[in-house]
Amino acid sequence: MALLTMMVVATFGILRLGNLFAVVILGGIYSFLMATVLVVLDAVDVAMTEASVGAGISTVLMLGTLYLTKVEEAAPVRRSILPLLIALGVGAVLAYGTFDFPPFGVAEAPIHQHVVPRYLAKSVEETMVPNVVTAVLASYRGYDTLGETTVIFTAGIGVLLLLRGGRKGAGARGSKEGGA
Amino acid sequence: MKHDLILRVGVKLLLPFMLLFALYVQFHGDFGPGGGFQAGVIAAAMVILYAVIWGVPAARRVVPMGLVERMIPAGVLIYAGTGVMGLALGGNYLDYFVLLHDPAHGQEWGIFAVEAGVFVTVSGTMTAIFYTFAERER
Image (cartoon, rainbow over all chains, first blue to last red; front, side, top):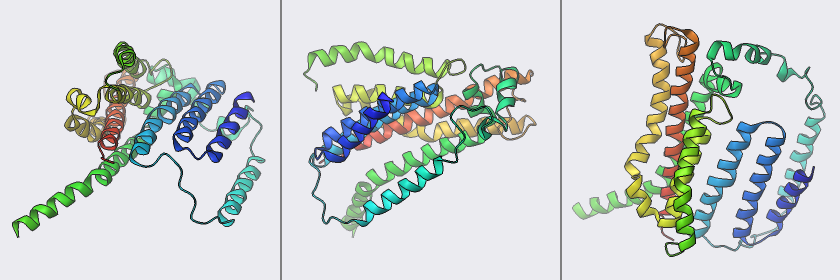
């Protein structure tokens, strides 16, 4: 509960502050708090990812972006009430959706019913990998993980093309004009 | 930050342990938390920390952009290639049972190869994105 309260405080800090440097650092703090919450929930693998990606790499990339832009937040062009209403509406619908969730940690919840008992019972025997998370990710759900790796590949190529393609294209155009 | 002695010495002490931790997370992923994705990010974080302290050109001498760019597709190819290996040895795509004589051992090695592929792609992507971000002029 204390962690969640701190996360709310960090969120309001992000919303209120105009200094983007402070916002980025608060974002990192938020990610670390989230990682701690995930550790409390016994999701150590996810916590590790959140701490390294959310708090580590994204914070560095945001700081790198800040270096290229201004540190102070730009004043909004116009204040409009519609986005706020949409955000509140979506948030309310999501909160309403959580009422149908099974209570936290109940064994009868659908997610613990389908294939999970088999994974837990058989994974060590079938894969010789004691960490069930690894067994599920890399073996039982190997296609999904291949898809995820491809997503990372695509994202990396996309960012490289976006950030560098323009300059190279300009250079090629320049040389063509030089030739003509 | 090149002239900050404490940072330089501190980071110099930290770097080998970061790489060691990345490898630990990679190879111990079968037993404890972690795996290719987390290990790749930690390895990339090591390169990024080096670049932050000594500058991107120094980091690019250690880990050249050409290598990083090749790592991005290489990891996916390792992953997909493991699947094709399964096909070639008479199983389904991404079937690890056929990789070795003992099915469970095959699974172990298949998971190992696949995680290695994830590691290569993730660390390459993260480092490449950081390099391109850091080298843009204002």
